[in-house]
Image (cartoon, rainbow over all chains, first blue to last red; front, side):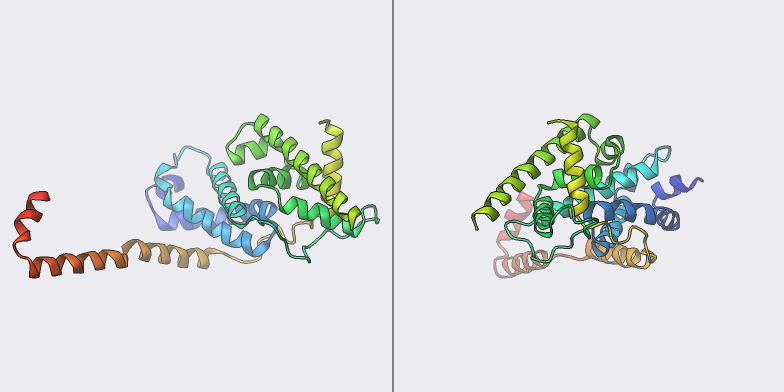
Length: 175
Length: 76
């Protein structure tokens, strides 16, 4: 019996083999969305728990890697939805080190803040498409949506960010 | 909105958002997975407290009002 058949039948040893084969990849994908190693580890375990729970829905002739990535994306999206900052964010959000001083510390804080305040579905595509430069195709497959919808969400994310940044700039100017 | 604007935002985000600290998994998560599986299977077999309360109420009713047994059987 093939590994995937055994897994679909509920064999724990087959699940362990699959877990060990794919945990690094699931983690690497998740950490690029949530941008926190501890949370990404927990979400990796959550992803595999969902995989195990829904094993009967998996077709053994299907692509396990793609299936796992899709479940990981949904788990990460659920996390972003539930932990979205409502109004305030901590003052010491981690920022990228300034490469050449092109953008001031204050501006970087504002951008970082605006990014973290994006609605979950836009933050997901913004993180993957704009920061990590994943292809629209990869994101579409992982999120279970069309490429054109990914494009629309990237456009909207950029528009929201621009609006927020204009607002923040105006707020800073009035201080 | 032009692609130039998206490109510009990409540059801004790259300068502002902290890079992923460590995309390489440093430890094996299987032990954590096993304890999660144990926990979940335990919670599946655990009877919720309100079921116990319901059973207790039903027992009390049946003991003190045995006349309600035929009515209960009728509705089952």
